[in-house]
Length: 419
Image (cartoon, rainbow, N blue to C red; front, side, top):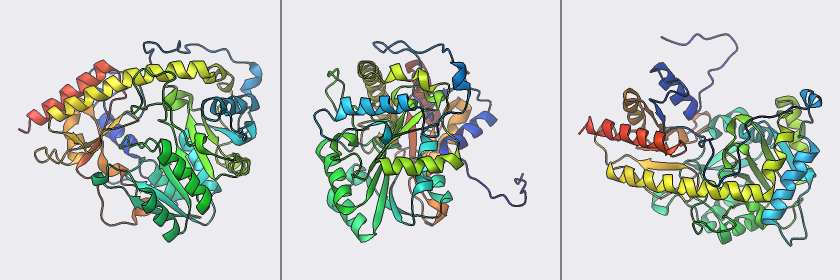
């Protein structure tokens, strides 16, 4: 049955996760149903992890916080975010972040939308594959032109500094958008490579917009190291108000509070002022009552404790997932160094399972959800005729271990049904 067309409205596509959840709900999926396993989910398990700080399970709201809050968030929370980054990444540096470098928003998409609305008439680079929600974000705002930079599996979905420099100079890029670690490949730019990215952005006058929502899900460090390894471009910024480095993060992944819809943008003060203006007409400001509840979560010792627990739990789930998938003939071109996803290469599976969309559809009768790889072929306004990643699927190890085991058992049944 064709969709009803209402005069004046365009068809707005669903992001990959929203699409697969809609299809699953048509097949009987409901949230909380223990018979289903959602290996497509873009959020981590939210329960208590061994060694993690106690979870917030009740809140008391000051009546004053029932009112509208500032567009950029309460100053106390903005300063708390600045203090955290200064403590973790900027000890001993002359230039320090203050509350004026922080803007609070209602989740990652709201923060990125504010940034997109504040960009000028420029060329902006983005990578392929990358976060599925970038596609519509890069389509809606017409001031800038999105230009894709292809990442190859043969290179481990990494880009050399020389190649990136050529892209910036040759295509006249004035901004570059990337998730780091990358959703969906799990690949990570860190250490000296990340320092050189920041240096290049400074030298070439190209704003580096980094989605760091998975920056605590890092598996390249020593297991159990103290403090646990976290990655942020904030460590390599020289001057917080002149270096063109913009960082977006929040409670969703690294603190495992996705439903709170609290995020922040860390940037030069001039950028914070620009996105405040954008937020005033786009969203009106972040959730006000929850902001006072966030302060204790951002205490460095609490952050280290939560991160250590995340890394211990999710490293185990990553290794288990990779081992199970290999046993099914599903490979990872490059093992994830971060996030909680496997960018799964289905090419060795029998037809039709070697296609990510068919793989997803065949999983629904077995009550397992995955996300087809085609959704990460970020293609704003469908400018490119030839798609990629048809043979891929993003498989999440975000769910709890029992749910993950149940989902991987279901995928084994799907493959056995086509053997």
